[in-house]
Each structure stands twice: as C-alpha cells, then as structure tokens.
Length: 231
Image (tube, rainbow, N blue to C red):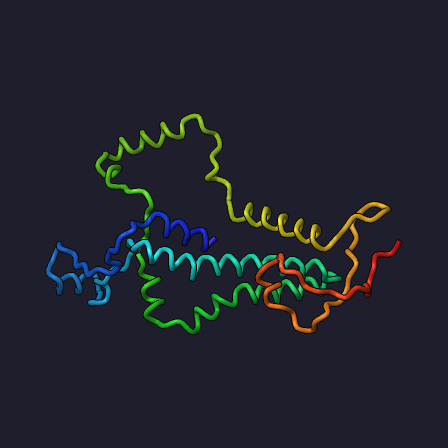
C-alpha cells in the first residue's frame, strides 16, 4: 500500500522544484503574542509539506525506492506463502506466522529505532497533501457545497467507498500467491488431485543469486530424483 501511495505522489506532484519547508507566522497578532497564546516556540512556525520535484528526481526515486520495495514485497509474499504452505501442523503454522510477521515489520522497527529524530519530527508535522485543489470549492457557500454532495449521491444506495479495500487486497493477493504456489510446486496426479512435483537436489550447494532475482534463471539439478509422488 505504501508503494502505491508513493507512486501516486510521484505522478501527481508538479515536475518542478518547489520548496517543501516554509516559515509561517500567523498574522492575527505579533509573533511574541502568538507564542504566548498558542504556547508554542519558533520550531512550531516551521511547516513541512509535499512539494514538486524535477523529473530526474522522480526517476531516481522510482528506480531507487519504488522498484526495490515492489521487488522485496513480491519475494517476501511469495516465499512467505511457500513457507507457510509447506509447514505441517497448526502449532508450527502459528509459530511461523509469528516469525513471518516479525520479518514484515523489521523495516519499520529499524526506521523507528535508528532514524534521526529530525526525520521523525518532519514526518509527524508533515501537512496533509491533496491531489485535487479545493480552491474552487471554497468559493461556494456551505449550502451550495451541501446541495452538490446531495445531488452527487442522490439515488445511490451503495458506494465503493464503504468497502474496506485493504481486506479485499489481502484476499486477492493471498489467492494469487497461493495459486502461484500450486502452479509452480504441484502437478495433477493420475488418480486426481494435486501432488508435489518430483524433487531433485541442486548440483551446487550455494543457491545462485541470479535464481533469486530472476525467476526464469535455470538452476541445475541432479538427474536423479530423491522423492517422487507415490503411484
């Protein structure tokens, strides 16, 4: 989900350099009076926002951040499903799910504990970012905006906004990765149903890195199988 959000930001932000930090002091009173009333300091007047970036920086962010995140997500999901599907016993499945959850949260734990405090401060005070401008809507009165919303939703008993999309995405991708597991690791038996494919040992003891990065890389296996499905 974070990768998709980041792609939206790269696509919709202007392709020109813009300032992402501003120093804004309210104009309704002198600065010292504002500090006294709001009980704030100079740091609170510094505002952070998402701003435009040149195209070459968008390309760099896409290559350096988005592609590796998608690659790691794909491999983690694929081998995580394989890890759980090949675990026998409900007790071991629960233990392995806990271990897999730790692996999935490892990056957030590293960021939380090892990133600089200034970065946490910037992210906590980052202003909300809207894709569509609301300047035109703000020119209308409250009554006009209310009537526009009523007309837009008039007669609509159901909207997709009511559906929580994260569980839907979870179910869809879980089904896809489970189907991929059965497609790659199983075959149809003569009596019907799915059984594991014949298993052979690799000729090399070291797992080739290219086979991990590129699925179509041909890994050499021994000609003799150490396990075959029973007939």
